[in-house]
Image 1: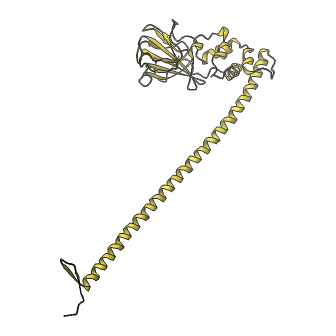
Image 2 (image 1 turned 135 degrees about the horizontal axis):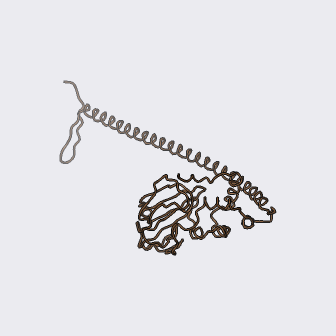
Image 3 (image 1 turned 30 degrees about the horizontal axis):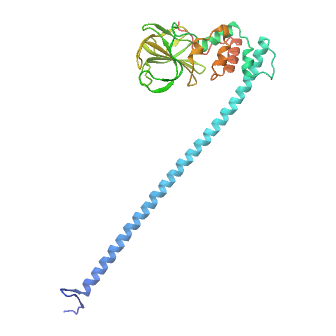
Length: 304
């Protein structure tokens, strides 16, 4: 029998005996366990560093795309500003030409509104202007039940902005479009609360809305001319009584329809003062150019 070293560990109650071979095995196992633990911890740490690096790289790419997008937007805005400046310069030239055409003397002392007030349009130019821009009543005028602007909604009782005008109307009355255009929407409109709604795109930035209709008589894509019937008045949607919600938007911004309803050829310059959101200078210059070139309105032609 080989000699072995016996190690005895004792206390007051009991004792343990280990051979040196057993101790070596325990030490080796402890070292292996320590190495394994350290290896796992190191791998987890490296994995965390790798994930952090990938996340940082991804964020950098996102930031680079955002910066590139902002640079592109800045370039686009710069180009738009330059185009706007050029358009204003062309507008001044067109107004000067128009003044000369109708007998006015061009002068730098006139502001644009003053120059417009002093311009007299021909019958052909007025006819063209009143074809492409909404004007007059969309149904026989019997008064206003709710004006344009802030109000308490009669159904929801919340204070909100009223983007149109509510015209008093009995049910089953014909509703017609107030300028030439193309029907953009025709049907029941849930989100707005307008019920049966017709939207007509007149071009040149103008759109008209006809809401709470009992019946829609046109379809999306139909071409309409001023005076064409687009629906029958009613009380659909969020409405407490029969009426017509009539709305005019220019470049997605609501404008007060009242002044367009009251707009007449005899005093056509009045609207230039009442409605400030529309660049009337551009319209006058455009109408003058179109009439001079004998070009019909850009609105679609009337149906046969």
